[in-house]
Length: 76
Image 1 (cartoon, rainbow, N blue to C red):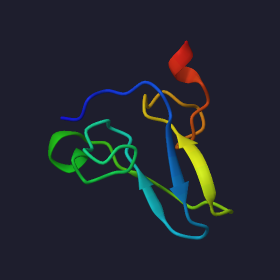
Image 2 (cartoon, helix red, strand yellow):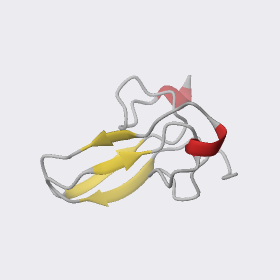
Image 3 (cartoon, rainbow, N blue to C red):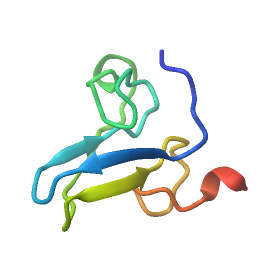
Image 4 (spheres, rainbow, N blue to C red):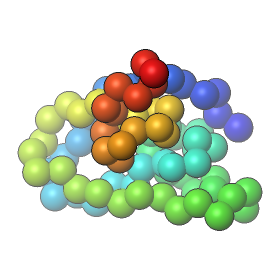
């Protein structure tokens, strides 16, 4: 199991590409899904696209109200 990270993860994402954000916290490729949830949980990955190629801050604590983006929930 991957180590629980509480800070956002800065990552470069490409416009119009489909990404799968990890919702369970088990992925070894945080913040992206690697399929680890399939055998251990009933959770599903969160698919998303971005409108612009640039750096984004994705949530790693899984508490965000705006998945997959960090909204500072880890500070509460």
